[in-house]
Image 1 (cartoon, rainbow, N blue to C red):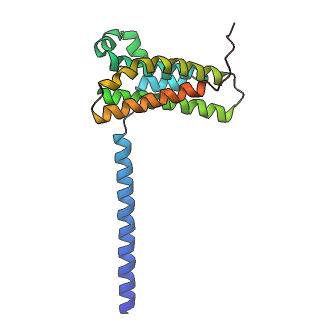
Image 2 (image 1 turned 90 degrees about the horizontal axis):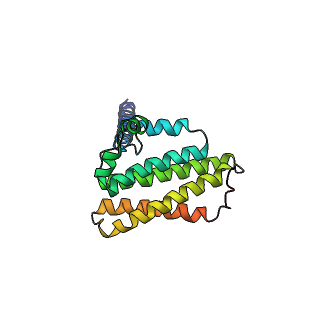
Length: 187
């Protein structure tokens, strides 16, 4: 009888520990999801969803990254450049720190790369693949020339890390594009 009580007690403790463990994992996963902010505005997300063709979708990612780039380089110009029509289509520019904006640029470029990779896996012969890669590489080249000079002024840890991450993404895109045959111009 004593063994049965000990066995039940041990089973109860094991079950309680398992429940606590599951609750801790679920709570930390929920908190991580909440703390991970979205790098795109709701309107930009909608534009991505609406753009079914890879090259058009890539252009949405490029425009979203350009908007953040302008906010990093010249915040006043970025705010004054927003017309009501642009705000309606793309959403308000996110009010973020320079480090967060740089992180957003890196994440947006990474998302564009993921979209291209997904298309390459599903349709490796798609004529839109080289076009999208070249578009993204041209934008990355432009972004790189504007962001590289910030290395001298980005001294804060998170900002410096975000800048380097964005620059690395751009460099990878440019290098990948060099391996893609030239895109024939459309007539």
